[in-house]
Length: 93
Image (cartoon, rainbow, N blue to C red; front, top):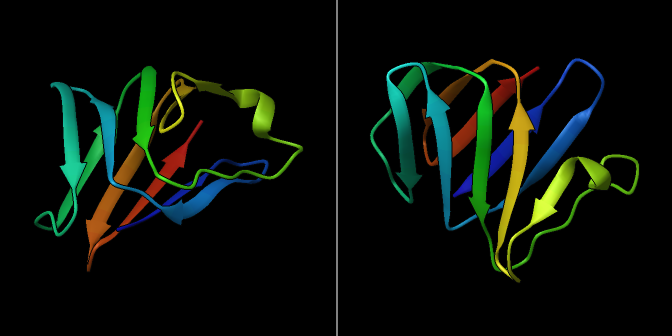
C-alpha cells in the first residue's frame, strides 16, 4: 500500500509500506494492505512504519527514528488519517 505523510511544512514521506501503526484518539491501531476505508483523528504519539525500501528527503530525514532495517517511527503532536483504495494519507502536526 502507499503511505503519504504530509505536514504544514513539507511532505515527510511518500512510498510503499507493509504496515503503518498510528496513535488514534481511542488507542493505537494498525493498517495493513487492502484495509477497509477509514478516516480517524490522531493524538500525540509515534507513527510506526514498516517498509522494505524506506526513503525520505534529506531535509526531513532527521524527524524519523530507525528501529531496525525495516521499521521507522515519526513523532507527531496530532493529525488525521484517511485510508482509501489502498492509499493512506496522514496529515500531521
